[in-house]
Image (cartoon, rainbow, N blue to C red):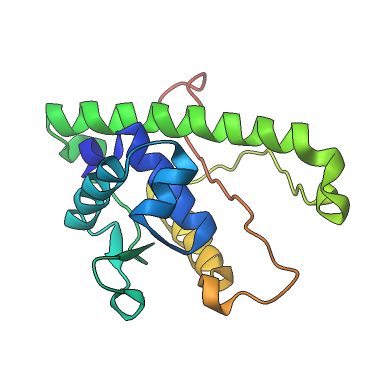
Length: 178
């Protein structure tokens, strides 16, 4: 799955589906500036990994609608990964970090024209002293909070917009092992 996700076009398709809620291959192709064959193929690859689902109730003739699946994405821990998976996950992490920094930069550039949303930048930096078990518990708490505020496109009321959230926690590389 990590190798499938490391494809930049598939990442862009997932991002568009996150923004649109549901879309056809044709809609995605037009928005991304690629062929419908390219989006169709990559949607099928994403579907084979459970990352997107068809929306059968919207299908008309040969037109197929797609949406992101509600499944979370988790990979085995580093110590449980083989060399191929490890390389794919590392590539994916680099891709995501680059994309996140670009998206944040785009927000900062667009901020002045966002009206009341210009102030929507809760930001925090800090550190905590935790055991491995406590860090896992901390992360699960974050995921629970995130799920509490997630809603589907059809359940989104007026005045609501997509807000990008990111969580990263890692051991301080400067601190000696204990």
